[in-house]
Image (tube, rainbow, N blue to C red; front, side, top):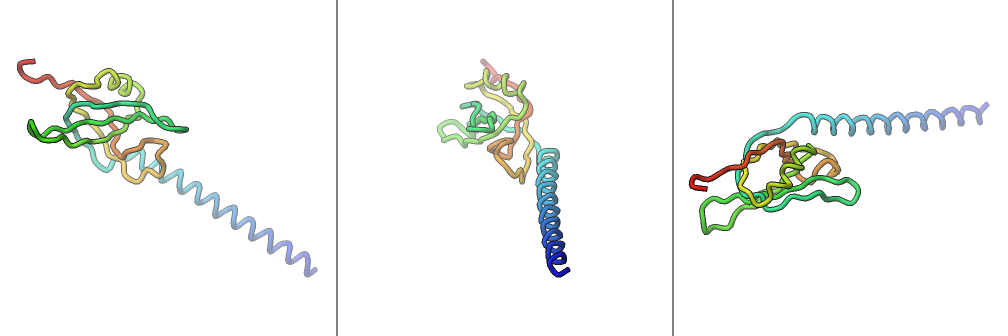
Length: 133
């Protein structure tokens, strides 16, 4: 009778551990969904697209870098961004070296870099033509 009681207690502990683990996994999945679904901010940035590539060992992501020029003769500020949309990525890869106005959304708290290396997700752009060009 005593041995049977000890076995039941051990089984209850294992079940509690499995329940806690399942709740943790569910919590991470829900947080990831939330972080990717709702944006913290959205906006536009303009500059020259310096580089755009697909990178990563296991999780391949599209990453780009925009040079934000304030005035001529001053070093540009470099701004890194990510792209999750395959169509936008194809178009951006052909626009390297051009001046762009890039629309993005910021997603803070994404728990892994498998979705993107930066919190800024570009979702569209337009090529900017300067007067006289």
